[in-house]
Length: 338
Image (cartoon, rainbow, N blue to C red; front, side, top):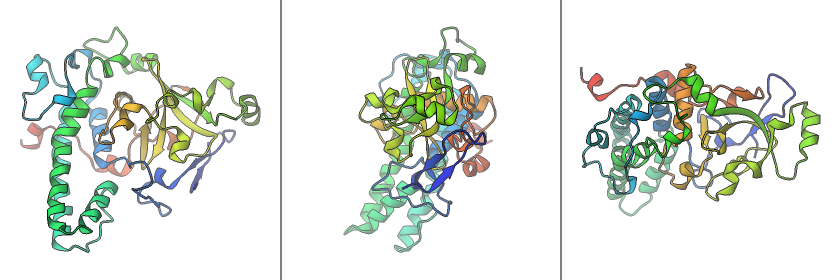
């Protein structure tokens, strides 16, 4: 059910009609159901985006060549040290953000242990759901301890070793870099080979000529859902799968690797619709979101730029939560303990 209609400042575009899950948790009309809706963008996801935004471009020379995330273990030697390469600064920030966020979340477990009926309104949506499930088990204390261990593994091993390290490979993020990018990477060069295009996404039965005529927009910036790359893979969501009404003015990434994925307004930011991000719900970053982070950092904004196409609403470009952006300061472990 649509709860918010956002109109473009230009007036000619169709409104961006968003469901409850695409609203911030603080929104008075927010009604989010963990069981029935796609996962929210976790606070750690916003923080990691801000980390890479602050750190700047990742060079090809910093990307791993050989790395298997499925056999990775945090007890092993750091793969960058093993390869004799410098670790991307954004990754150093992100690893510290994982440690800090894990430490911050301890208070939620302590609260539930001290008072099983304690309010969970300030707890991230998925964790609040899991804590509520712990309360409803026959042995809440044991369930709570198990959930604490699961969450700790997510921050210490799953996010860095199985997700971020995987994305930071030449075969992953490297596929979005122009061939000339070696030790330096220019934002203009990145957006020359990858574009964030303002488009109107329409349902497959819509007549493009009618949409063009009605909204007075160029036909090359109108796309059927079936022509998005996410339509070819079952686990990759389309805008309508997220409850976004069509036609919808959205930001669509057109990448050097040949794919075309819309960035979907969700929670308090955007989520890429590529299969890598949605095939495993524990993943917090894909190569397209990494690129978006670096480009957003290059323009010093939590809003992604429209590098080509239509002037879509700001909500369709807001990549990072303003609330988290105002509170988060990227740091490395060494900076934290000076």
